[in-house]
Structure formats: C-alpha cells, structure tokens
Image (cartoon, rainbow, N blue to C red; front, side, top):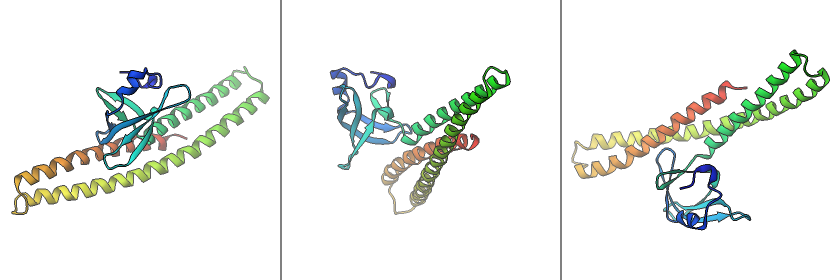
Length: 205
C-alpha cells in the first residue's frame, strides 16, 4: 500500500481499494468506513468520505491519512497543525539567528540586515499569534477529554461496584466494561499527547 507522502498519486485500482476500508484515529478509536474518494482536477486523491455508522459523513483531507496494515488511520487535525507550526517557528528562528551571525561576522550590510530581520521578526510575530490560537484549541480539547475521562471513570466505577450486587450479571459486567475501558484508554492517550504538544508550544516564543 502507498505511503502517506505518495497517497495522492495512486492507481485506479488502489483508489478503489479504499472503498469499504475501516478507519481509526491514531489513539485507536474506530471512526467508520470509507464510502467515497474525492479527486482533484489532476486525478489525485484529495480526500475520503467516511460514514461514521450513524448516517453522518466526514470528509477527511488526504494529509490526515496514514496506513496501519489494512486500516486507514486518521491523524487529528490539531496534531498536524501543531507539528507544522512547530516546524515553521523553528525555521523562522534559525533564519533570524543566521542573520545575526552574518551581521556579527560583518558578512551583511547593516541596512540589509535591518530590512531582513524586520521581515523575520514580523513572521515570528504572526507565528506567535498562531501559537496562541493553537494553544487555545488544545486547551479546549483538553477540557473535553477531561470531561470524557471523568464520566467514563465514574461509569466504570459504578459498574464495578454493581458487579457484586444483584444489579449486574457477570455477562452484563463484561460487556459494559469491555466497551468503556477501551474508550477510557483512547481518551487518556490523546490527553497525554495533547499535553506534551501543549508543553512544547508553551516553551517557544
């Protein structure tokens, strides 16, 4: 199967092979099945249509898709945007540092340095605004995950407590716990990765 970086350039048979494939996010949640593929004017895959099992459709851009064996993995949009932002900030800071080195070594006129450094500083200011917006998005998602984890944990505790009463049969307990525990694990994994990325953003600029 094609790798992520070449997923837009697939043969017709490879494009057809997407139909019916199951999808999951990078934390393990099942997200539905692919029922359609969208192409751009050059015949390259642009997005897939995912049926979520509830009759609702999600259109997922190709840059969010990777492969794990026979399953298509959908990478969170926030993760892609944060990784891109971190790369842009690092690049802008390196360019500004290189200008400072050139000036120190008298390899660039002061007037040209002033012009170029202003442009780089403006770029960093724009990236800082994007960073603040990204942090707000991550913090909002973090609060959503905190609520999910809290609610799932409460339900799981109630089920475990009920196992020893007449309210639950062993079979009912097994079914309920096997449904809740994976979702609790998925939310916890995303929360940890989100917190790690939030920490990275906090340290820069």
